[in-house]
Picture 1 (cartoon, one colour):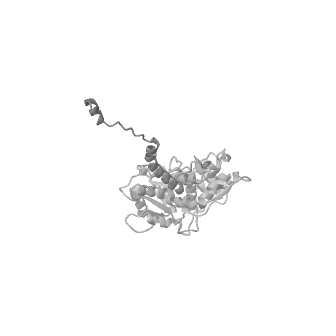
Picture 2: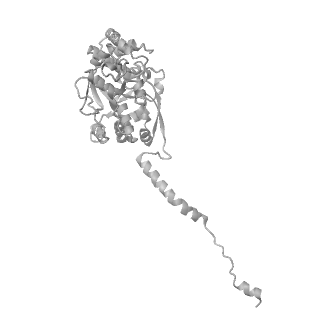
Picture 3: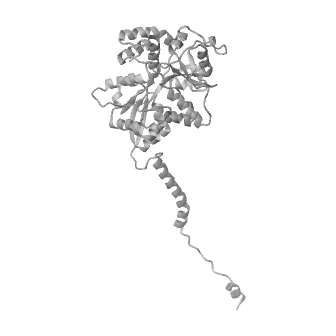
Length: 391
């Protein structure tokens, strides 16, 4: 055997291994794909996402201050889970009630009964079904040192004992006497400013909270709502100087009140209770704790806004029905600070939810005294005299 043959005998032929690329791909792809599918199914079941083949119905709506509810991401997800997306056009309540293209919307949601009555009047003979999903009181937002000044002035008192109560009761007639007398904050606390003691309210011609405050002031001054248009004009003239002293009105006081510079914009602001509770809940969600500097003044003669969602179509009916009956939406309404209408108090317990969040419960609607607003025609006449409205 030659040397070359001897060397060749010890060398093995190279072996080629055929790799199944499909098997390698599946071994890499299937585990994460399985996790994705399981996660997607779980989200779908929870209502956080909609199925890929689910039809989404867009519902056009004009909404006043309660548009905050429909802007909430959880509310949007729940509605999408039912196949609906609400496309919101923002407007003040009375602006909404008088809009020229009212019929182009599938539902509207003014913030109070007076604006709702005007909508029903305009929709007479047409589809107009009302739903009352929740209510919220009208309140005055202020800061602790200003609330304490009002306590010193003997027009307010804490609702419960403690170093830092969040809620006070205020006698509106006595507060208005200070406003009419052009009292200054420093008159009751020398550490406060020399600015005039005033309440800042939204534009009554556009915002229901501004209009309701006009009614609150008139009721505190005259103890009864105007029964005729002539009486409405007389009452308006009597309270107009106090309201004119506020200066230029904005559409909504809450955005100004809750910013860090809030006390420079409005020392006392007309807002809704739900706006304050939503603000406090979001602080807790972000780990910031309760804001004990911002507090609420509850008028002794309270006014609760119980707005109607007014449907003009089957799609609007569906949204109204969901707000009235869907457990997830009703629970979210409570979480956003609203009082819901429900016989199932265990499931939709406003006080229980606040206790769970360690937020004190305000004494809402615990007195026999309530602010009564004039009927629609007289009320609108009063507001027009106050604000020179362009209706």
